[in-house]
Image 1 (cartoon, one colour):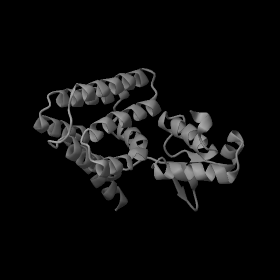
Image 2 (cartoon, rainbow, N blue to C red; image 1 turned 135 degrees about the vertical axis):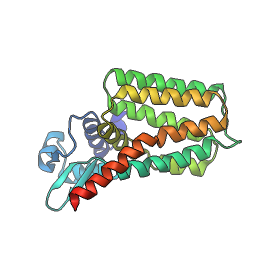
Image 3 (tube, rainbow, N blue to C red; image 1 turned 180 degrees about the vertical axis):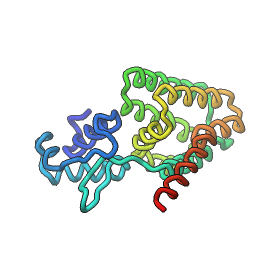
Image 4 (cartoon, helix red, strand yellow; image 1 turned 120 degrees about the vertical axis):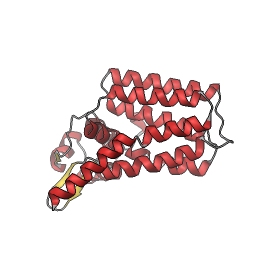
Length: 223
């Protein structure tokens, strides 16, 4: 419960939810003095919360601009997706992975929770559901080190999903469809089909093509 969290964690979670739900837009400046006053905390406590959000790729700092709401670049999105794809496919597509009715039920539970969050327009909660759903898959592989590495990337999921939606011009309903397709592939228990589905889920060719085009355009504009 939130009452058991440290003060910096309470501030971090509140700001994280605001950022993910676009109450604080990408590029918006975050003034430490006003935020500290709003939360009734010291600047030190607020800075601790903001540094955690920086680790999650949700805010950035610079000496001249101070702190502002960040957005992951296309290249960062591609890198994060590739890392998660390698870890998740490596875990769930092994013969030792346990793909049974219990696993499918757990995936369905998280998908239902995600659908409710999407209906409410709550991206922050949808991110939590997404993280738990994929966590169920990676843990099915039974390799503790892979699970540890995968969960080390959890903090960036919010920034990843928010930035992906902004770049692709999509909406949250597409997030549900993509996860429903992935679960259907897992239900076949065919590891080749599951591997292909994970590759499409994380490395959709159209998204990567669009990413490459945007990067080339950014380079042209910079030159």
